[in-house]
Amino acid sequence: MLSRTPPAPGLRIPDTQPILRTVLTYSGPEGAPEEMANDLRLTPQRQAVLDVLRGSPDHPTAQDVFDRVRRTSPGIGAATVYRALNLLVAQGQALELDLGDAAARYDANTARHDHVVCTRCGAAGDVDAPLPPRLAQAVAEVTGFAVTGHDLTFRGLCPSCQP
Image (cartoon, rainbow, N blue to C red; front, side, top):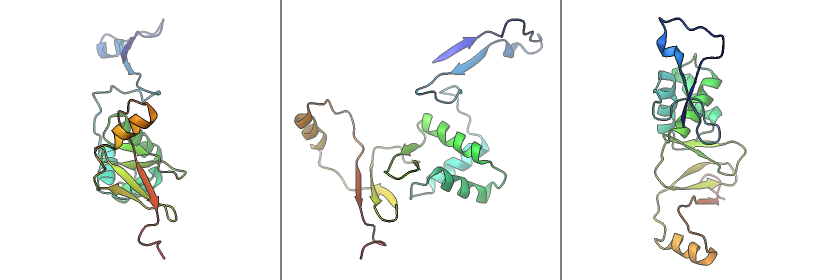
């Protein structure tokens, strides 16, 4: 939701800067960053973060993203990477995943899909196997919920951790 905030009382804005007379702020879900929702500029820093996410099949943490972005953009700061991740998630260009470990993971694949996580090493990946088409309907029948979507995470041992 956009709101117009007039300048503070007593604040004089020069006529040469008419665009500064009104401040536009974005108040998104759960205090999303103050930026216009449909006007996210893809700065070089945000592009670098998005490129890392798109090239990462392992669902990296924010720290992983920061480490990888620094390889190509050594001057980028951690706060910039974290802010870029939050903005990309708020814009629907990335997903923030809770896969059961302490840190959030990020995924540039925003299409509906499921995940598999290793309970020993924490490796994570996308599940490309189709799910039974009646799964959501069966859950709705059993629980009485009107199911509108789901996020499914399979857990087990990855090939590297299996005995």
